[in-house]
Amino acid sequence: MRRRIILGIAAFGLLYLYLLALVYAIGVAAAWPTPRWWLGIFSAHRGAILSWLLISHLVVVLIVSLLFALIIVRVFGSLSISVAITFALVIWAIFDAPLALDAFRSTGFFSKGIWLADTVQFVGVLPVLVLLLRRLPSNNRFERSRVASSVRQGGDR
Image (tube, rainbow, N blue to C red):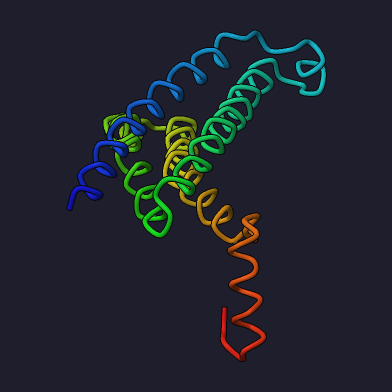
């Protein structure tokens, strides 16, 4: 019982730090000017700026989420996927759910596309990273020796 309470408190604290890190990193990435070399790639100035914002936003979300995915896998173990999905849904509810009505009221695809890209990033990135990190082989020598002895005895991993 005490372990669940401690893990719950740790989850709330980690979620708060994740929210702060995302807001700060996304704000910093949005404040950077579009590089001149990027502007030269595209024929339209607006297309260059918007694509730079989308790509830099994705990169920032990936970097911040990778750090927190490592922490979630390490701290929460077998509960890590459910914790990551919960984090993703809470963040989506805070950032993107309020924008859904405005996005779908708009006449063009741009607002809907931005909203959809943000939704996919916020809902998908953290759980997918946690899932991938959980699939990595263990670097713990005791874990490896236990798995190896289980396989030698005819057991399944």
